[in-house]
Every structure is written in structure tokens, then in C-alpha cells.
Amino acid sequence: MSLNPLANPKGVKLLCELCQKPAYLQCTSCRVTYYCSEEHQKVDWVGIHEKICSLLLPLRTPIPLVSSEEERKHRQAQLLNRQKQMIDMTRTEGSKLLFEGAHEAAVPAALQALRFSIAVYGLSSVELVPAYLVLGEASIGLGRLSQAEEYLSQARWTVLKTPDCDAAIKSKMYRICGLLQAAKGNFSEALKNYANDIYHAALVSGPKHVKTSGGYFHMANVFFRKGQTETAHNIYSEVVNTWSEMLKNVVNLEETQAESTLTSFVDKPTQGGEILDEAQEAEAIQMLHAIYDLQQNNSNYGAANMVMLLHTLALLHTIFWDTSRLKSSYRTL
Image 1 (cartoon, one colour):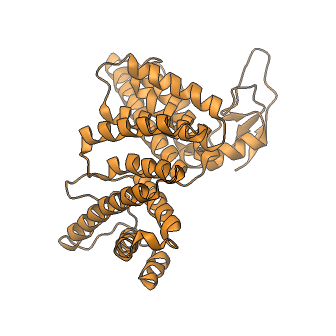
Image 2 (cartoon, helix red, strand yellow; image 1 turned 60 degrees about the vertical axis):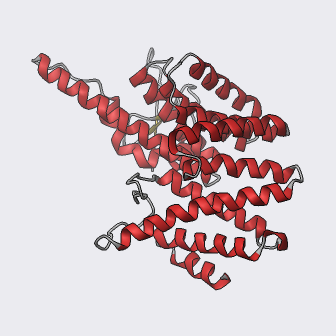
Image 3 (tube, one colour; image 1 turned 90 degrees about the horizontal axis):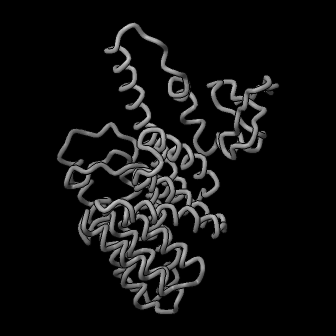
């Protein structure tokens, strides 16, 4: 990607995509994105801009004057649909990057999700909360705990003002609050937050669903750090079992259908027909490999538990065609 240096005319204020400071560089591809420095351009490119560069021009170009009210409404509806698609894309990409440990790269995606959410839903909508949570988790990963607290305070306040807030959003909010408390060493508060996370996730998906397993995984991490290893090992095993059942369902469904043309775990249906996105794929990889790294030299984990874990990893890599890791998992077995 190349950049154009800018000499802004008097009265024209162009702002950096990341920090909102005066911008002096322009993306030469979309020509509607600006930066204060090459460093911020590179961070934005890696985080999200490479994926959305070609999509930004129609979103940031004013709707032209049209001759009929019907045409104007059609163009507004088209713009709204594009903005909502961008929200979904940037939220998913930000979450995926977090599970991959790319905390700095997740920030640009979350900022885009926040901007488009504000444009579509307004400043006080609960639809802004997922973006706040990605920004909060990224800040925790970068060690910026005070900044994380600010994002989470905004998320909590918005949820508090929304009596009918979706339980899935509450679940995610409690999970990130738990991560913050764990990062501060407040393990009791972390466990309370993870318990609330599990409760709200179970309301939506059930206690044995992969969407609930993340809360259990983080709870096990806290017990492990507290030295309560037996409790931690038991919870880790339940997380593995949950993913194992889901992955076996996916494999069984594919065996009953025509040969799939999909090349990744993305868009693979679960038993109930639900679609798992890239972020959930990344979450599975992150959790299962973290458990394996923790337990591979632990004789107390038990042979049966280790076999189940390795089999689950093999299923995971089979589904998204990671043959090198698949062979490694079966060699270990």
C-alpha cells in the first residue's frame, strides 16, 4: 500500500484513522482514509484496512442529489445495509485477532466497528457495547488496564441503561470484566464475573454449548493460578468435552451431505444448523491449544483426558484442513 503526502487547504481538517489527530498522509487506494504517520497506517493496514479498503469509498462518499424521493430512500437503505455489514465484519475480525493474540491489530477493527455502530444506531445504543468490549480486551492484552477500565465502564453503563439488553452481550461483558480483574490479581472478583458470564451464556445457548465454554475456560485459568489445580483440570476437561461433541456433530453432518467445497472451519454448521464464524474458529484454536500446552507434561491430568484432548484437536484441524497439525495430533496419539 502506498501513501500520498497531503498539504491540507486552509479550513480543511483531515483526521488520523487511529488517533484522530491531524492527518498528513492519504491512502492512495481508497483515497478516503487518512493518517498522521506511517506507523499508524501500518497498524491500521494489518488490523483491518487491507480487508475493507475497497469497501470504504461508497460508505464515505455523500449520497448525491437525486430527482425522486423513492431513489433517495433506496440509496439510504443501501448505505444502511452496507454499514451493518461492515459492523459485522469488523466486529468478527477484531474478535478473531484477539483470540490469535494480536491485541494491537485488533484495535483498528474495533474502532471501525465503533464508528459504524455510532453512525447506524447512535451514541447511546447497546449495539456499541461489542466494540467497547473488543477495545477493552485489546487494552488488557496490551497492559493498558486503566484504558480497559474506561472502555468497560462505558459498556457497563450502556448495558445498565438497556433493561432488555441481550444476554449474549451481558455474557461477553462479564467475561471481559473477569479478564480485567484477573489481570489485576483480583481472583475472587474475576470468578464472580466469569460465573455471571456462564449464567448469561447458558440462558442463550445452554450450559454445554461452545459459546458457554469460554467462561469455563477462563474460570479454570483463575483456579490454576490460585493453585487449585484439581478444580482447574476438571473444568478444562469439561471444556474439551464440549468442543469435542460439537466438532463430532460437524463431522457427522458433513458425512451425510455432498462433499463440501468449504476450505475452513468458517461457515461450518453445528448440529442445530448454527453457523460458527472466524472468531469462534480462532477461539477454539486458542483454548484447546492453551489447554494442551498446559497439560502435555502433567501426569495428573490423566491419560483418558489427554486422549480426548488430542482427539478433539485432531477433529478441529481436520475440519479446517490444517493437515500439518492434524498429522502432529495423531502422531502424539
